[in-house]
Length: 127
Length: 127
Image 1 (cartoon, rainbow over the protein chains, first blue to last red):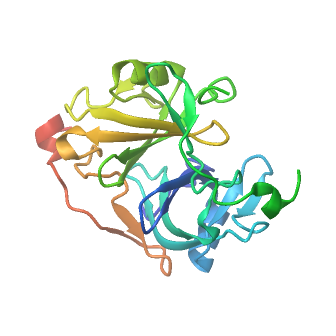
Image 2 (cartoon, one colour):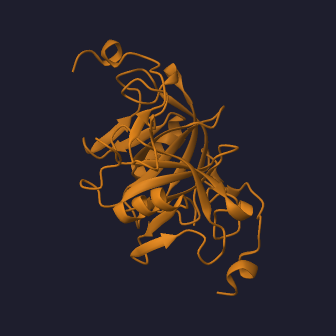
């Protein structure tokens, strides 16, 4: 076994973690082409399931992810990347992490536990 | 939106992160029942895709994950749990983290970058 097994799973989930403080930034997917491009360029490339094409993270916002380390798991069906997140925010909603809502286990209710790093309208324009 | 969207995705990927040092331990999946059991019991329950049933992590090894915090992402299709990992190891191969193989981007070759915390044969018996 020499890396993630894209033969069994065409798409593999990828956890992006901030390399310096360990914050989990987002979860996305790679296919084999995205994985190989990431290794070759040192800039993280995902596969967008909704757009069905390679997704060069940051291509519109400039908020690219520079690859620091890349790992795969015991079953070869998940990947972890440690990255430098340019712009300080991975989430298209302007938060550092996409995981900005915490669930209260007792009630099941969410609450927002982070501050926005940028205003999405200023970065992406009105949508 | 009041939590992960199990209507659109029957199974949602879940990142387990060590609550004290931020290490990413593993990636697994929850269905709605696993998610609800996790909230109710405070002990992490996944759904095993291979066994097609609820997977009470640690039920054979004793290495349960006590829930400290639970989050979901901007698209409501991924979950992050911060846990206390009993026994110090999440991986069935005896490592703290399932992500114990790092890829060298230049060669694509993996190398093991962690030490085993326990001997799987002693915990699970010979297999």
